[in-house]
Length: 248
Ligand code: SF4
Image (tube, rainbow, N blue to C red; front, side, top):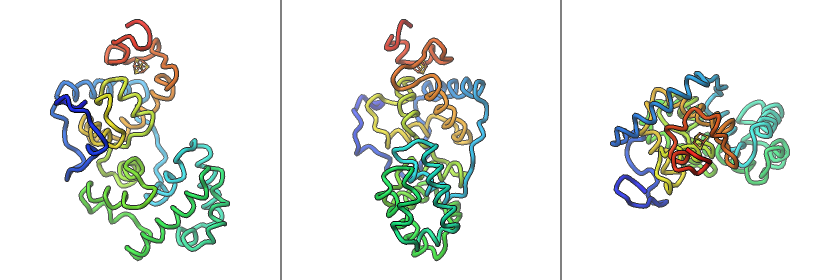
């Protein structure tokens, strides 16, 4: 449900000219701020390997439906065999598929990666994505998401970590944790959650807010069995207060 009591649907996915529209609910923004502060006190400003934008784009296409380890093996295989993106673009498709097999869905991901690289070089004449920094954030995101296999999460990761542009990526951990905490309407879909959560946090802290929510989701607020007894957010968590995971 949104603030007006309307159930959000796929059609409510982001469709406005700016990515960062501060949420009008100041109490919810304040709650997000408190959650951010507590997570920051626990996890700090996490170091996050920053890749060049195109590396990150390819990396996140590889990461779909697999774990970080398998993604990293596939990406390393690919870069070892084809040191430049031009070589990946022009390679025999079977050779690319072979390199990325550890990441799974190689028959789908290989052609997608090559199609993205072909489209970028055809449009731009080179493989440099830094031109996106000169665009409005919404234009940059629209440019990135026009490629098959690049969704809002992938585009947002590239923007916030590689290009230092405001965008809030929502992965499976953040989607689950934000729902339990009550930071977003329960039925809001994951695409709509990107801009909704972006409206709750200070754009200057999107990077650590994103990573620290993931860390909480991994070590405490797991999908199957959240360890609420060890959580530092129980008094701010709607699911815990409702008694969904034991007595509040
Ligand atoms: S109190 Fe429990 S459900 Fe709520 S965020 Fe913490 S671990 Fe997750």
